[in-house]
Length: 543
Figure 1: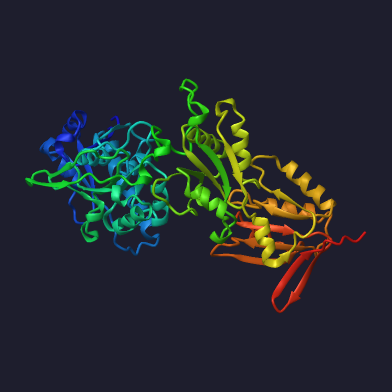
Figure 2: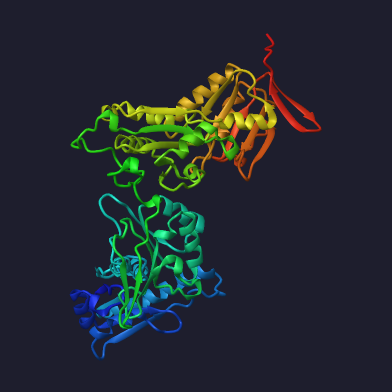
């Protein structure tokens, strides 16, 4: 006997008439209809599929042991769910092994936040499996709203409402349009994130899209206590230009909600008119684009915010930030800049310096006033070099680039203990991402032999943990074990800590990416006083 076939059947968002022709045929022909539900036993998927089912079909009702409740399972919530998926997969495997075809129902699309994918992972390597895509709830919500989600080069970000509010806020700031799924009890946090990111006025709430219980409201008008799991918050990229007639199908009621004026965060500023918002991964303009004259260019200003405290950002940098149409930078640094109406924020990962520089130059070429944000000083292991290097490409000829200095992390850490950098010193990054470790070790050895104090940047990260010990071993070949070492972590930030140890006592496990090290020289001395430990490197050199 040959095995049966597993079908992952996408049912669409709720309206049975939005089930595809293929899905309807497979449901009618399958030997077994499988579907999930919570303990209450009501399955939305089965309700959608019911018009296409035939009498006498076998049904497998897969009931979750836990949804939002607590559990006494020894593995906690995840342990209970994983065990359920394993047991459910074996129930379906029994039918498939007996030669029966199984249609596993999935609301929306089977591979979009669906329970089907957990069965697919456990069964597709043993049995033939085919997926029938379905209309997603995002598409249905957009149709209910009656406005496009994105147009041109705008970017749509799909977010789960279960994300931490701070992370949700960051991602909402960094995208042109957003769909937030999995609302229910998460809605208060979602509403807060929409407000904190400046997107609440642009956001809409769509409940049970395409069903007879559909509701569409402005996101700010929703009662937090009345939000089901099957609801979506949408922040469209294009601004609605006409009033939206928001009808609840089957109820004969219609609400008129005036088109909300899009906030300045979600549309291009006048100086950059005609350019679409884009992500930090945007590549430079195609060479076929008509070249603008230099008079139409904006500019790129690379700034340093200082190492942590807002008090360390210079007035010059603050003026540049206030006058920018676009901010470009590493997410952590962008988040340090208060949101301003009219500014677009383009945040990205810390490992895409060249792409970030190209994007800033491209925006300026289209007329935008772009500020590239760095921590500390932009010329010290930061974005100034990356922007200037990229600007040498002929395609950016005529785009002005300026650099505004900032307080360095090395100077900030040094100030906390006195003046350990009071004489000649060097700055060295331990990161081997852009240069090989052999070069790093060679420079450490040379500077140590020259008897200069050393400020160590980027000493460690979650993926790079061994360099601190290797650095210590190299330095001990030239420095005494009692050489002072300052460990400054998050200086100027809320979790600041500064400690003084000796080189021999330096413990690599206490160092992370937010730590800056200062290694003393032969003339570096420690003073113990009532005010605490002070360190200085004498300007008088003993011959």
